[in-house]
Image (cartoon, rainbow, N blue to C red; front, side, top):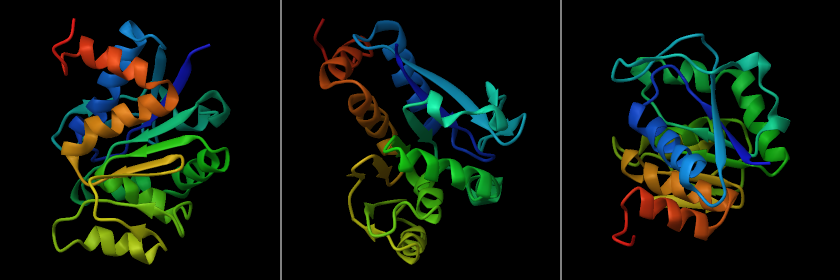
Length: 198
């Protein structure tokens, strides 16, 4: 039985940061040595992304059973586009807590580290988030009891966090390797042409 990732889409999420997950997991499903499935969900029936793309999640949030999934993927987003309205919703914070309680992987790109921090699961643990604009997001993470590291990608046990869109692919590949194997990731990188091997 293949592993399954839940992709949470918040209002105002960044399209690229969601795309890294759908691409890497999609290629793994089609050409990987260890296929992985992905299903998207949201608190709303329709989501307007930061750059105005409109998307519809595959399953309603209240129909999500965490036991059906091995990992949670969270793209970051922008406050002025409504991102924090969704990611700071107690229903989503509870979902994060459930995944962490079971030791399941949580992969957060850029500002997506914020709800992971707010949920409390990063208290006393290492993480990172967006570091520009006077590092105010990092200061907020510190207020959540997080040890903030000045690194592009931080892995603390089951939780992956990162600093911005440019780190998205690394986060997605790290998630895939933690779910499957380095061999599977290497195979996907060949098919996606990240390497010149054939």
